[in-house]
Length: 227
Image (tube, rainbow, N blue to C red; front, top):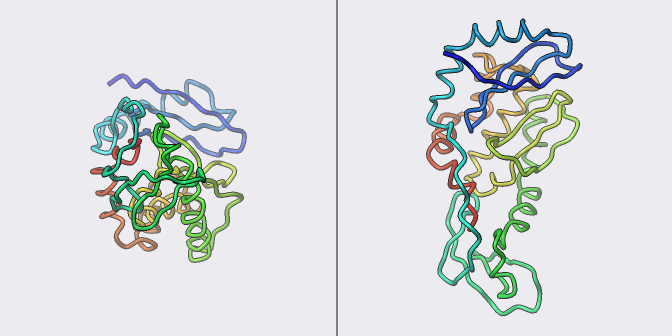
């Protein structure tokens, strides 16, 4: 099996690690001093593992997003794992309100890229970031900064500088799924690779880890769709 991969180098990284993104792209993270020949050898030695990962049900190619459309009454939108009715209302403000349904000003209904994107991002910062702090205290770890980001193919990441990045689209998922992704990234502060110890840390923090992973496999693409 020939493996096509890209290499990302960092002077702060101490060892070579390989990740398979959700779009099946293989990325090698390596210290700056490691030669290309050594990276190729490591990738070759892991080719069977890479093949298994690229066939995983959670990996999928990017789907074209449906073009923005005019919102109409009666549609629904996801929030924390549940669908809520969308209602277009005459409102003097531009603010979207949530009251067990989404109340969207008529002036914003025709936004092609999703009238609710800003609302989702604001709620993600409001609801998800405090949960990062809570789990950090429970695990006894520390990070430099936690951010809500707009990323593709990753629900979260832990950088070599100990920053935690979380995809804003997670706010559409159930809270137990959010907690799983948070725990997954924080566990990397204790164990950089997906070793048995790593998964034990995550499962201890989130006992329903398997349920959360199954949910993402089944519904992950739905989170990326715009209303």
